[in-house]
Image 1 (tube, rainbow, N blue to C red):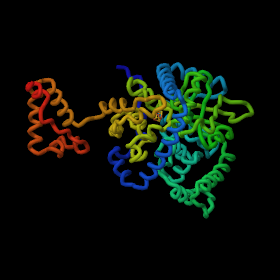
Image 2 (tube, rainbow, N blue to C red; image 1 turned 180 degrees about the vertical axis):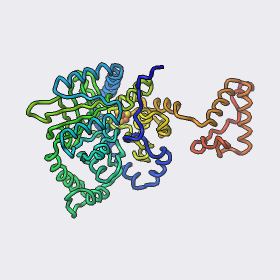
Image 3 (cartoon, helix red, strand yellow; image 1 turned 90 degrees about the horizontal axis):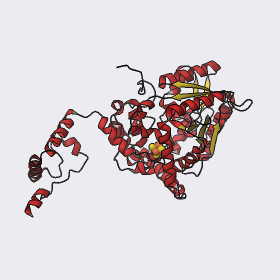
Image 4 (cartoon, rainbow, N blue to C red; image 1 turned 45 degrees about the vertical axis):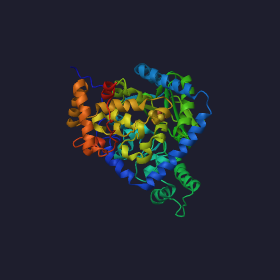
Amino acid sequence: MTFLGMPARAPRGVGQLRGDEPFPVAAREALANAQLRRNLQHATTTIRGKSGRVIAELPDWQELRAAGSALKAYTMANLPLLLEQLEEKVTAAGGVVHWAADANEANAIVTDLVRRTGEKRVIKVKSMATQEIGLNEALEAAGIAPVETDLAELIVQLGNDKPSHILVPAIHRNRSEIREIFLSAMPDVDPGLTDDPPVLAAAARRYLRETFLSTKVAVSGANFAIAETGTLAVVESEGNGRMCLTLPETLITVMGIEKLVPAWQDLEVFLQLLPRASTGERMNPYTSMWHGVTPGDGPQSFHLVLLDNGRSAVLADEVGRQALHCIRCSACLNVCPVYERTGGHAYGSVYPGPIGAVLSPQLTGVDDNATLPYASSLCGACFDACPVKIDIPSILVHLRDQAPHPRSEAAVMAAAAYTMDRPRLYEKAQHAAKLARLAGRKGRGLPPPLNGWSASRDLPAPPEETFRDWWRGR
Ligand code: SF4
């Protein structure tokens, strides 16, 4: 066989796609933190309510979801051609396109671009892709200071913490914790700072304003890239993104290759779906779009880094590729009963919640995140909430099938299949199960070594009379 090097998975040892502990271990720790659960419950309930109200205003929400889903399926089916079209349009508009096969390549490209400017500090727009590849750590190792400008990301960065939610990275922090972080880590902060939200926001604004005005390089992600025109788009709520995208001399955008939409008109669908599903707003307060370089206006040097980092491998999986349709709205997190109790850190990846449970294992290879496909009750709330109709439960089941299973489980399944294939044997097994119930196992689960399966599940009691017995009796 000839190994062509594609599709590769996200490499180990760089970025934030793998946790230090399996999900059940990390989740147990999180469950012991009552404050965390209160913060999460309050925040997810508030966002859910707000989102539900604005979605109910649209009579064609289901049609919009179907359109979003179809557009993403079309994009994935034509991704190579659309990416080349995007490269052509961005280049024609004065931008430079770089192709990064993985996190290491993307980090090296961005670090080199910043070095060439001679600058020692960059400002950043909130970006999942740069967190995924560990760009901040790579820049710091090269002596370049990255400054997060999204308020929640800033809280996470100053607190030496990790994000726990796609949209609200500091969802696990309450206002008094945020005050403590500002007092201990924000330069020149007023020592009389209170935990009143407007006071905290004003402190961040003072700190960031100075940074915006004195930094010459910005790094952003992108919510969408339009192949037809070469336009990039970022949506946000605070205006910090707009400052980063317009004030510096150099702008470097790192974007996962799946963020593409084919045509300008397609944004009409996504700009309705995204804000309503994510922040519960009718439209995003700031929608910034840019197109290459405009002489005398905005950054005069623009670089677009197109990131694979395992996405081609996801695309190669006919069931799993739906995960690439995600527009990172976080609606699935806010409705997930598992996420609401454990929070994001337990997932060990920058992508938490239901989408993380299907995306992270596919980007890294299932072996490296084997417990994540089980971080779900398969209740289906994520599927109902997803604005682009990603069937997350089906992908979870598909990935569970690929996860390594203990030999004992494989042996039990083989024995069960053998038994179910043979009616007489099956009937005997049914009678044996009934005897076991009479022998007192009722309510105590399965005997060892199968007791792990029934430790957290109710074992249905065998009926008094099997169907066959009933049938014979008639
Ligand atoms: S999977 Fe769907 S609901 Fe979850 S973040 Fe992505 S687009 Fe939003």
